Image 1 (cartoon, rainbow, N blue to C red):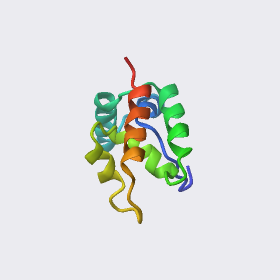
Image 2 (tube, rainbow, N blue to C red):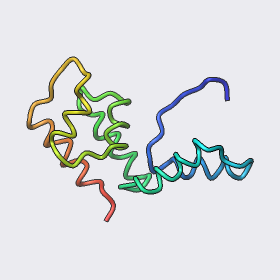
Image 3 (cartoon, helix red, strand yellow):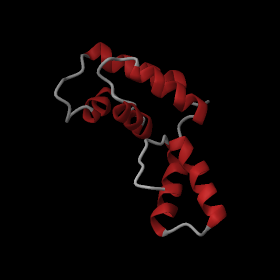
Image 4 (cartoon, one colour):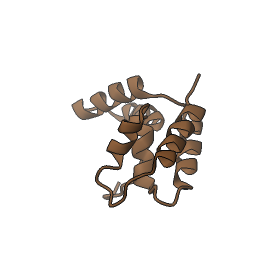
Length: 109
């Protein structure tokens, strides 16, 4: 793998690390990532992909922000606002509520 980077959703991490584990033993960081992902999964891989696509339909949500939202899975408006704190814009209350609703719609039951 030549310095390629791409975003990976939390539900995809165990699959990727399982493939790595078939080839060799996981290093310390990879084991921590697998443990974190296992406990942090809030949706299925298919639902995560749909959610990322739905979030990116909003003109101000980039791919990086969409993946971050899925990773953190905010449950409160302040959590959503914290994700966007470094951005050059502030989300309106209805935009925050829309993000929270999309998360609720895609959470596994």
